[in-house]
Every structure is written in C-alpha cells, then in structure tokens.
Image 1 (cartoon, one colour):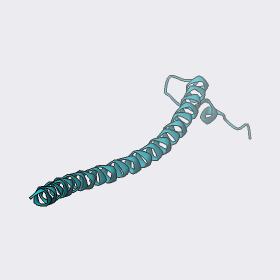
Image 2: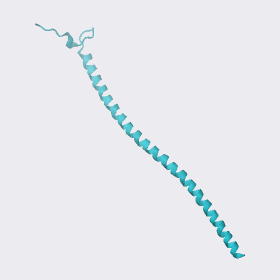
Image 3: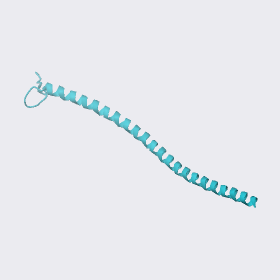
Image 4: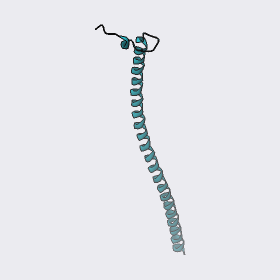
Length: 96
C-alpha cells in the first residue's frame, strides 16, 4: 500500500514537472520572437543613423553652396553701376 502511495506521488511530481517545463518552453519561444524583433529594430536604427549622417553631410554641402551663392550675389549687386540692373563689367566700352 505504501508503495502505491510513493508511486502516485512520484507520478504526480513528474506530471507537474512536465507541465512546468512545457510552460517555460512556451515562454522561451515568445522571448525568442521578441529578441528577433529587437534585433531587427536595432538594425533599422543603425541604418537610419547612417542615413541621417549622410543627410547631414548633404545639408552641410548645400549650406556651403548657399553661402557661396550669397557671396556671388553680393558681388554682383555691389558691381551694379546703373539703375537698369546691368553688371558694371557689361558697360565697359572699348576705345578702338
């Protein structure tokens, strides 16, 4: 009789152990999916950061070009002599 009680307790403990292991394995697969999603987002963030750096370099280049264009406009405006808007180099006459 005691032997059957011991066998029953051991079988019940094994059933509880198997259910616990299956539950943990189910959670591990969920954690694995979450880890994959986090790795994908990390890769996306890395790509976006590289794109942002490239965009920043492009903006700096455009800013330099805009500064050069403003300087050229200032030179052109300073060189105007008549009210008709022609550049001063255009009104030079030759003496020949």
